[in-house]
Length: 192
Image (cartoon, rainbow, N blue to C red; front, side):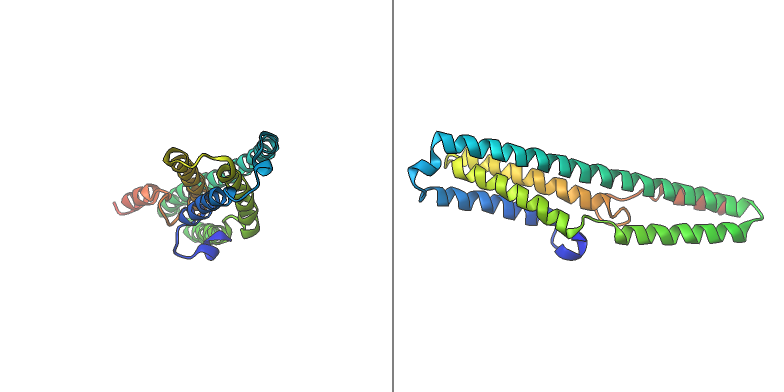
């Protein structure tokens, strides 16, 4: 999983550096290519090829975000259900049965979070596709600050999208978290 791969460095920063660095290096290397490698015909085939890779990358990243969001929502609903079960536990005599159910749900939530994440081979494949795209940006981009700034902002956008998927897959830690409000409300009810 990605979280074990990146450690404490945010994955978005790593992706930004790789993609932007690829574009800048390709910009520098393009100066040394023979002119026929940068012809309009070459630019046309590179553009069409990169459009295919870009479409595929967008679809896969969209699916990753959708899957992560669905997982986050499901875990949030499970926390709400556990909160309702706590109230039921307090109000009903079947306390031992509910305790067992709640402990099993809690254990499952923890296991699902530790097992979630983008598998490293998937991340590497998507990164390879984006490296191809950014290399093509650098190959034909004009060498000015506007082009460089736009390439940088595009890299930040992609890094942020991947970072968001990893955040959604760890709903009990990180920047995007499941609300503790249902559990707090359950504690208020049982403490009366």
